[in-house]
Structures are given as C-alpha cells and as structure tokens.
Length: 159
Image (tube, rainbow, N blue to C red; front, side, top):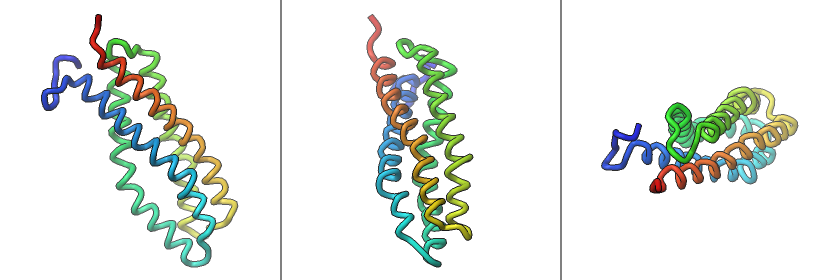
C-alpha cells in the first residue's frame, strides 16, 4: 500500500486521512443527532409525524452514507494493510467499531425509523431510538479518536 499515491500523497496517508475525515464528520453528526435531532422527534405528532420521519430518512441518507462508506473502506484497508506505527490490534479495533456502528444502524435504528415512518410514532419508539443511538454515539466518538491517533502515528516519519 506504500508504493501507490493519490494526487501525490502516498496511498497509506490518503487512506488514513480519508478515515480521519469520515470518522470525524460522523462523530460531529452523531452528537448533533443524539442531543438535538432525535429528541425533537418527540415534539412532532399526528399526521405530520409520519411525513417528518419519511423526509428525515430521505434527507439524512445522502449526507451520512458517503462518510459511512468511506469509513468502512478505509477501516477495512487499514485492517488488511496496517501502516507502520498503527499495528494490527488498533486496526482491527477500528474495524470492529465500524462493525458495531453498522450493526446498530441496521438492526436497531433503521427498524425504529421504519416504525416512526409507519403507523407507530409513539413516545416509546422515539425513546428507544434516542437510547439505542448511544451505541453509535459512543462508537463514533471512539472511532474519531482512534482515527486521529492512527493518522498521527501512521504519517509520522519513521526513525
């Protein structure tokens, strides 16, 4: 992975940078979602709640999916070809956090969003969405810290 380059940047550095940007962006987004956005679902009621939930999904997916895909590809590449200084353990831990995020997203949050967009826009569903989303909030925070560390040690000159 070290001999290839993208726009003059060694591929290893480009992958570490892409991971750090994607993880950092998702960390910021998930904290906004956790503290502001998801709790506001409880303030929407009646017929508007279903429309709001559907529009939320349509607007959110194009914002988060590119970052999530970049993060997945970068974390996989780093786990397969760990840069010097990063080590296989940290690389596997980073990929494991991505797996936790994706599993939580598709096993917990997506079904809850489907309920909100369907016939069950209840306070209980909103509460479960907010509570279960702490899994992703914690995991993306850890990912952002780990990705920043990997960028630092993976791009430092070797002695």
